[in-house]
Length: 240
Ligand code: ZN
Image 1 (tube, helix red, strand yellow):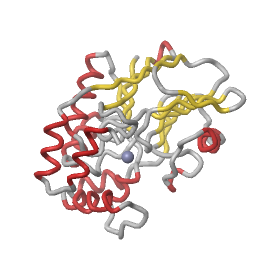
Image 2 (tube, helix red, strand yellow; image 1 turned 120 degrees about the horizontal axis):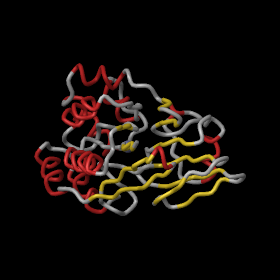
Image 3 (cartoon, protein in one colour; image 1 turned 180 degrees about the vertical axis):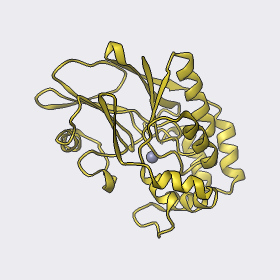
């Protein structure tokens, strides 16, 4: 059995369609979404419809949370704020209800999923190093947990001390714990513009990171046509 584990789509329809097509071509029959379906890019409603259509487990991201309510946007940078205000106007009441009802942490089979951190998932902290990962490991009750939020793929492994290694292919070993950042479908920030997601080969205890080129020009044109900030289109091309 193969799971496609993806998140931080951020309303990038071209990247999402490319990822899901690749997942199906590679034999994935199960899907898991780590949140931030909306925000930043130009197709929030369309991306939500696709994710909802998969009928898969989804956890809430910080952009999902903010897009679903109408409070003022404290704690977001001006670029994210402008995009979120636009997103709120371009989601249906039903879209917002779906986002609002998402849970922060879920267990799927024998692994856990969360958008940001396991220690304080509602505070939307970022895991950038072993120290940050250690805090989450204290609350991780399965041997594997997948997360997102930083938009940069990375693997943290606890085998005594916590190690941090680039994410490529990993075979899970007994007795170790794994906290895996799967990167971002729709707005990668690790300097590589290609869409990222992970395939989990459940029977082989094995994961692989996938990076895919997609129709970035169309995604950029839509951002500009929607009147969203040009910087949001530019950043897609540099992966930052
Ligand atoms: Zn995000």
